[in-house]
Image 1 (cartoon, rainbow, N blue to C red):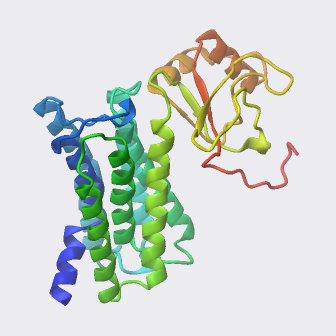
Image 2: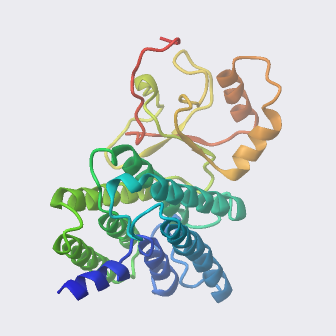
Length: 319
């Protein structure tokens, strides 16, 4: 049983799980019901292998080599980073590679050339590793369980957007997650709370990011996703089935345009290029000028509701 537990721990390494998901979207037949979750099964073979190579290099090879070097120079005691106090640097490395992968995709395949899940997967990695970095002081979250959660959350949304795709792949990912978590518990690498919380958090974050990005139309430019001072000045009524709403760029008594603070927003490469070329020098309040440029270039701005990012209210010079 111990040998099997070790075997499953290696087969379902956290670094492998996003790549398994990408392989399924590339080589398993599927017909999509939503453009943002289009299967690339019918894409040319060179395109498939190019996308797989990019994900494999930044999800598996680069972090794997980094961890081997950290172990070689005795920065970490074991390759699977068993000690809680040694997790900071490896998590930062995973965060950096997720960011690099996201920006590489945004630069090489900008303006939503690829289905949304290709951008959502590295963003999920950024969000999950950032969260684990923050809470690592108090709890040693199971990275194996988190990797399994990424695959399950990803396939749950992907499966729901396909009309001709076997749900057996999602079921298989759930079974694999159960085996992985059982193996980690059997080997006494984690407490139950560390395993279950890792799986639940990663599943919810991955599925949530995919759901939000799926609802953005092809021509979106900016998505504001933070609850700045509780602003809810939307032209449309909110409902439980809609997560993103088109925001008017016009000046009103409530808003000077379409922006909603700058704590967290997503922007396409094309929109960012236009703004960067024109933003400096500016001769009025920066956020007003930001809105002026949004109107000038007729950018399509959306607000998320409910939001994923929340501002912690503290005393500030502004208040």
